[in-house]
Image (cartoon, rainbow, N blue to C red; front, top):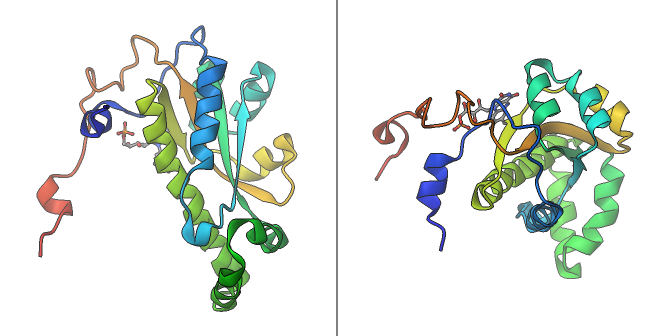
Length: 200
Ligand SMILES: Cc1cc2nc3c(=O)[nH]c(=O)nc-3n(C[C@H](O)[C@H](O)[C@H](O)COP(=O)(O)O)c2cc1C
């Protein structure tokens, strides 16, 4: 049994990848299956996960990713996390996500929000899948870097995403042995437990 606390203490945001070390196809497949299992409010599953291993496409995306250019080029894969932007997609897929008796509850909830509020609510669900994914990577011995430093409009164009909007991306692969950010070289920095946890 994997010790989750140990994984939490040893996973980190990788800043330098070994470009020669690719993730085996079966592990990529496992990550896809794990992402599918992410939880979401009312089981909305308002996401699209785009896996990119192709070198040319990664290079193209790296150019519209601010300070993340090198990481994206060197990592084995880039995974782009997008949220439903065209809300009619949600209206259609919800019938596959919820039992019939819960559809009215769902519609009633949507009625309490503007479209913009709905999009924010849906985006939160995609962020839940990020936490799920980073933990899954750690459990498989895969290094990762979550990145909000991307240009969503440019990503949408390059990936020809229709009805979905990229929120963030994650590099996955294996660290360069000299990566300065690994915990053995740069200890993890966190607020003290007493500052963030309250017992009442
Ligand atoms: C939503 C999100 C966006 C982030 N964006 C970037 C990014 O664009 N580039 C980057 O190098 N790191 C990025 N990070 C990594 C954080 O800086 C990092 O998680 C934080 O400093 C804690 O360090 P650790 O992940 O190594 O424990 C991001 C992290 C999260 C959760």
